[in-house]
Amino acid sequence: MAPTELSLAPVLQLYEQRVGIDNTAADMSCLKVPPDDLVELCRHLRDDPLLNFDFLSDICAVDFHPEAPRFLLVYHLFSIRHKWRLRLKCYLGDPAVAPTVTPVWTTANWHEREAFDMYGIKFDGHPDLRRIYMWDGFDGYPMRRDFPLRGYKDDYNPMGVDQPVDWGSG
Amino acid sequence: MTDVTVINEVTTDTGLSREVLMNLGPQHPSTHGVLRLLLQMDGEIIERVEPHIGLLHRGTEKLFESFTYTQIFPLTDRLDYLCPPSNNLGYALAVEALLGIKAPERAQYIRVIMAELSRISGHLLITGALPMDVGAMTSLLYTMRDREMVMDLMEMISGVRMHTSFCRVGGVREDLPEGCAARILEFCDIFAARISDYETLLDNNRIFLARVENIGNITGEDAIALGLSGPNLRASGVDWDIRRDEPYEIYDQLEFEVITRDDGDCYDRWKCRVDEMRESLRMIRQCVRQMPEGDILIDDPKIAFPVDKDLLAHSMETHIHHFELAAYGFKVPKGEVYTAIEAPKGELGYYLISDGSEKPFRLKVRAPSFVNLQALTERTTNIKYLADVIAMLGSLDPVMGEVDK
Image (cartoon, rainbow over all chains, first blue to last red; front, side, top):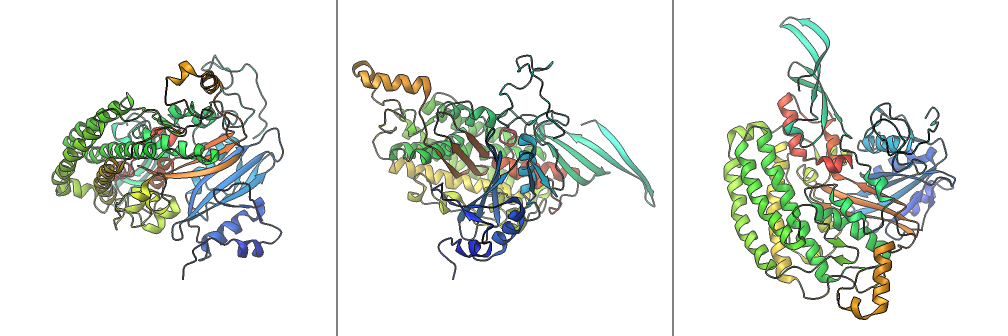
């Protein structure tokens, strides 16, 4: 018989000490996971018939600059069979590196490219980690909180902020 | 389309084989906007498709962070510019969820009517544009003629044809104008017959069928892994519709069928949309019939302008609230929420993080077209020739405004 309510207790037990629960939001359950356990947990969430999170809705990157840890990756999962949702949170330091979840969900490919393009988060093992919106050779990561809204001044952007910034090797 | 790079030349028994790289777009009518496809081809056989997106990137999400919650509505219009009311609706639901409020019932009905009208308008474009992409020019002229009726209704309701910005946090901007319900019902009657016309025109058209049937098949499993949603997913036999499975607004009070098909080819994706328009008509009719009288905006002076504009002249308090709201906007309590709605293209999600101020800390849009477009790159589908790429692209129905954000 199919379960009627999402139960995360077995997952928490299985990943004791490594995966925590986050009760701050009321709209859906949320798990906190360190980057090292992310892929393993995702695979488990997808393959366990009692959970069956086969659909990755979205990956959202967040920048908390100047707070630490600086970056956050938020994964929104959905189970088409059970019709329930789950949020995963994965905090990252700076420079931000996370493992890729493309082997688990193919759709993660472009979402991760977007997070890389906009926030400079690197995804280890990603098959094709290139910029997706900005052009090759663009300097900086536009969605970071220390990137000015109007961008930096250059020939095409005379209204931009007049201050060069060293973005490092990023 | 003239830019061709030869990357490999091989002489085989049958003659010279050339592997070439070709640019399709960004200025090409079949790419539905500014999409550039890099095609690696052996003669006419496709070996790799690589979409290059971002030509329409406006940094919407960056702008969200510097706009107040009310100012964001016009920005959401410009995501899926064929169906602005759906985008408005999804965003309004996200903010309302954090505020812990709900729009009055009449406002919810108006929102749903507009969202379904816009679904018809969005689907009408693809109903005509896919056949046009594969050579049947007539269909687009017919569907555009009928889409004009929807545009007229939008103009009647909101004053503009395309970027309606009609939703507000806590309701809608204005009530339906006088005589609007009758006009909507009239449209429903006319349009129901028109859908059958498209089917007689295209459904038995051998040339059209030859170009779209058994092209670009996606299995249900692959579609889920690819993150497809909406009609693209349902065409592959996956029975999931957010309107039915996680009902928002008043969808739980409406009767409708969720259209699914089995093969997941270009034809099924097209047909799925044609049938969905019928269901939308059914929903609109029910909405008009069931819609109660009442307020169209919540009665909270700190969030919404007063419905009774006379109060502004008499009540000092109302005046102050009105000024505060217009000048600074309203604050949304700290927290986060993810709301998903069934937009015409699929699951449209808004992930909102608020830090308690008048502007969102982070607002992420889960744009269905962005995810759907990824299906072009996957080799699981049976796209073989250059012409199939066009059919595949047309049937996935990406809107570049939403892909590029």
